[in-house]
Image 1 (cartoon, rainbow, N blue to C red):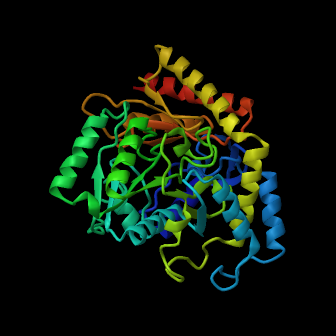
Image 2: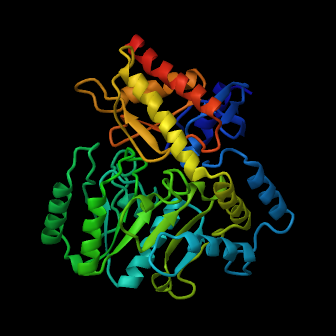
Image 3: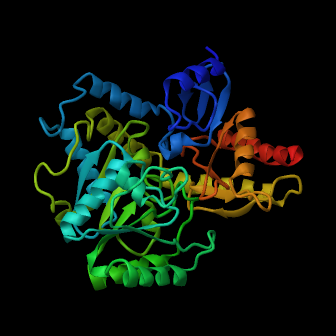
Length: 427
């Protein structure tokens, strides 16, 4: 089977609305390596978009899934419940970065998690308004698209969107927005569009994913906490991309001085199997009555089994510490590439733990991520899967599995440095 043959079949069978970052097709994968259908090997610095913190096919995850397959694959938790769902909820409740007792409910996708967090916050507060941040990504369904703070490609031509969703700029040194500007935008919002006592919640990514790996200063969270105390709105931490050891902590919000009321999780929770959830303060989570939450496949027994194994792997292999070690290795390599005189411009190195990104600016007058796309393409040609992101697509993000060996990581970093240089040569 050839990649080009599959590309032709894909074009004929699959709508163009779902894009694919690479023109190659996977045949098999192991930890931080992927082989395509033509047998070419790639180092994986994408991790399925932060889904594979424990790597492709971790043996303990595979073993847990195989064992569950031999018992039962589906009953629907709403029809006949099963103990592993409760065990996973208990384990997440025990480590939840919220104040007091916690409860957890499971879904299937990150967008389901963010939407249900909004439902819960609205039910608990009796208020409609949601404030999100520019550049944030919260999913592609209609409500989650409304909360996503990026028009292209997530909103263009797809409205109208649900009402009572508002955006303010995210303060961060790497996106040029100060905390004062964000607080001023909030003041304008409360004066012009909606009174603060009608806001149910703020929703914020502790580290923006698709938006460019921006991490706001602690002062923002302190300001949100003051508003919460004054007006009674909630804080939802969207941990879909930043959770489960990626930032050197189990949850990215643990880098901040404030505890949220609700936390959304997905991606690396189940090591490649579809599972999402909302974790929150127990009294908040109980605001919706029986039947108001759920889903046919929500909390799939297979995915729950995988997630229990993932939590074991994170603990036993000390992946929080490993994330910090990997992050230091990546930063050293990027700094070395930036110091060279034969690479594209490299700016804005950032991100906690192993959630690392940097910008490769476009030429003056161009702001569409052309240079970053060329770097990613050159890396792929050389055997490295590398993703871009950012509001203008100018950011290179690195999401290598935390279980990758130093040798594999160094191999990928060397390929990336070569790609950064070759793009300059070709310009």
